[in-house]
Image (cartoon, rainbow, N blue to C red; front, side):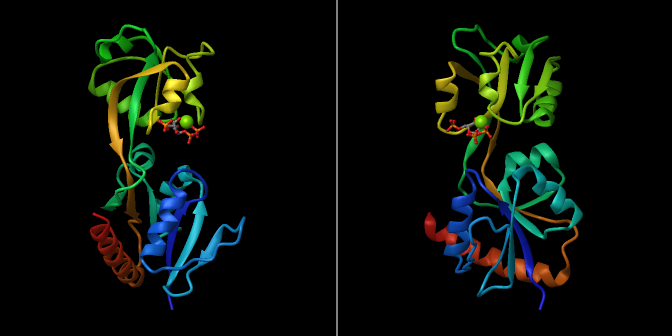
Length: 212
Ligand code: PRP
Ligand code: MG
């Protein structure tokens, strides 16, 4: 029998809540430490533990049928992918921040400035919409350190509690998008696996309703 292939985050902030959601859906996965693949014992599901940033490509190629991932990653990597359910956890925002005390009244203040980010596509779209030209520096993590080491005038990165900004002497100036975990489907999912997904999605919806 066919199995639905679902991609989830290997490690990071989404991982625990995602596994909890699957558990609450009555899907039990026994994943030994360091295993990148697990099979559910009581549901036709195969779980692949992947790097966040690789998941959009796997969905596009049909290597996986569905994923639980932050919408921010989808919008950055492939906004054409189809989000079918918002899951209510891992809420965060993608924001522009500058060092404390720097005067900032609006986005035009970023004209000609250097901005460090892990979200170059999303940021570029936002700057374009606002007719601002800035110099983007893509870095894959620890973005908040960039102004302190003289790499950038501002940063654009995820904010959840705000503590990383605070610790690095930065202030949030502009929210450019809001995000949360979502269920995203491959455009080339088979009919057979779509039927399994429908069952899983039905369970997810019941769990989300019960959580309210
Ligand atoms: C994420 C994100 C921010 C921080 C936001 O980084 O890139 O830096 O969390 O959370 P907060 O507002 O609650 O502090 P993460 O710690 O995952 O590390 P990375 O950027 O190095 O990947
Ligand atoms: Mg970070």
